[in-house]
Amino acid sequence: MVIYGSIIALVFIVVVAKLLLNKFNAQAVLLISGLCMLFVAYLLGFEMPILEKPTGSSYFDIFEYIKIAFSETNAQVGLLIMAIGGYVDFIKKNGASDALVYLALKPLKLLKKYPYIIASLVIPIGQFLFVCIPSAAGLSLLLMASVYPIMVNLGVSRLSAVAVITATTAFGVGPASVITSRSVKIMETTSVSHFFDNQIPLMIPLTITLMLSYFFVNKYYDKKEVNTNIEMVEEKEIDLKVPLYYAILPILPLIILFAFSEIFSFFDPRIHLDTTTVMIICLFIGLLMDLIRTRNVKLVFESIQVFFDGMGDIFKSVVTLIIAAEMFSKGLISLMFIDGLVASSQSLGLGGIGISIVMAIMILLASVLMGSGNAAFFAFGPLVPNITAKLGISTTSMILPMEFSASIGRTLSPISGVLIASSKIANVSPFEVAKRNLIPFAITFLVMIIIHFIF
Image (tube, rainbow, N blue to C red):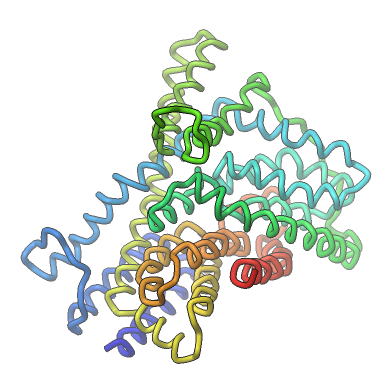
């Protein structure tokens, strides 16, 4: 049964990959393929996922899984993601994001004589901004408007400049990250402790690797292409709509989360705040700042609608993708794909480390195909507890490289939103940007595997 189920699951995976490459709607592909796998599993007599309140008909139970996915996702991680999305739209609309980027990019202007050093320094600065502003496409557009002209006017090719900017979104880490919010649910821990204990120790050496890789790769390709992609671009200052102290708003959620986390003991008894609550608190702090600055009550009230609109946009683009990916993972589980993966890996002599590497590679490829790190992680992340339970290894040891692999894959995907948006502004091909990103991220992925599993 395991062999037959795994073969059927692999056929579905191949078909899904082909449809995604042909730019079929990702939500529809994942949802329908998940339903089809569940239906096939039922017909072949596989064990189906348990329902607390079955409908009484096994056929209708298959659709009941969708309802449960909607209700559970919206009540938990979905609400969190929508709150983050709403807050990101709010700080983008009132100009706080621009203020933070403006301040963060100031140090770059001190190194105008060293273009490739500037290009490499964009990566850690952009990564810090990405932790605070967890919107890959949104942050890349901000950087394209601000730091991109600086790099190009200093002699960095358009292709190299876009590649570096997309690289700033390669590690989707931090308490406000969508991937982090899902992984901590799986690991049953908190986002802040996971960020400090697991993500930062791995992110630092990977960021340094990425900086060094891009320094040499960009320099080599720009010389090889005889600067054919270099042209002067008008350097524009960011149009600040608000005072610079508004730069505190994007990082305020992180400050509050850290201050009230279990890492610090500032309050006795301890106050417990989750990320969703913190986002709402920060929204009202931002509204109060707007009210004091503008004294325009109507404008402030309209800003609340911006938050709600942002939540709605995230629901239709991200949360629905998460639900579809969850149905896809249920289908894989019902066809015993995980049992087959574990059995085949063990027959090849692969232990926990080997299977963890296989999972990291799978999610990397899935992210490249889907153009979304979130979708790839939400499809394969729920499979981890079953695998680690069978192998007797920790969930964290497997899920951490999967988190990084999902974000890296998005940065290598020519159909991802961040590559398409950035490439369009620079008038270069997203496929060329993906090629330019390939070597640095191949090196970084290899370093990640070595550091995480060997050292």
